[in-house]
Length: 163
Image (cartoon, rainbow, N blue to C red; front, side):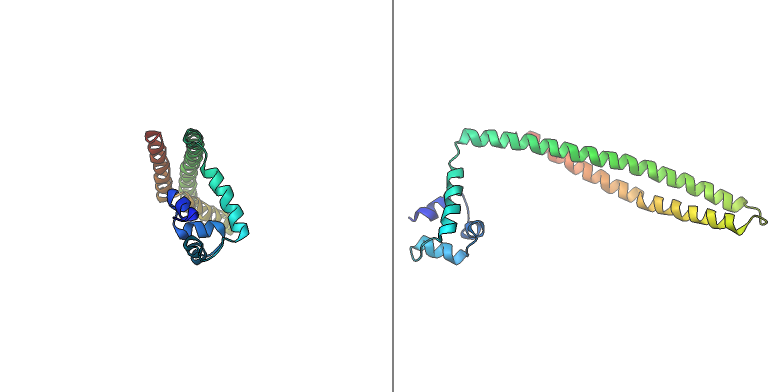
């Protein structure tokens, strides 16, 4: 059996996978494995580095996997904390928008007819602002954020279970 084919199969790579990594075509890999063609020098050098890296002892690979798991868990935890912070901000902004809209609506309803047009314009602009704040921080957007948090929590749980 061809050495390159044997190496590729030991790693569970398809011809296309290896060809993509080596920046050559799948047909070139096929011809090299069939003995019809030599591997281009740049691809051969790249393959040599890849083969050497694949020879890391299993214990080291387990250490690398453990380190990668810790990094992944830290990244997930950080993402979750940022999403929770964003969720709290959205809740506060939503409440602020509701309070502003209630105040503006009351003022517009109670505004004496003799008051200036300028007051009505100002209140209308604040009403638009309140509606924008409410829309930007809607309950639906908060629920979506909550789902994202739950997905990350589940990802953390899976990672911990597969330690």
